[in-house]
Length: 86
Image (tube, rainbow, N blue to C red):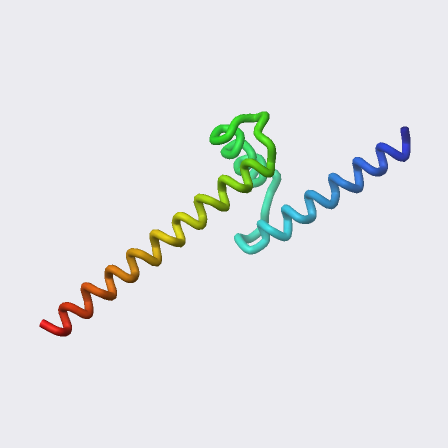
């Protein structure tokens, strides 16, 4: 029993340290910041969603946004090229 508690505690510490590193880029992170993100994910995907499903969904959204951004940049470049030629 004690070994399990130590293992759970070590895992919790590790998770919090990883969250701290990830959030550090935006300044000091608090538990409230982490809770806000988790609540947002729960609202968007449901409490029982598997982390892998959420991650895959977010990766897909990110890739779609990158693609759309690149497409808009190309369109803007073509518009500017036409203006220069006219």
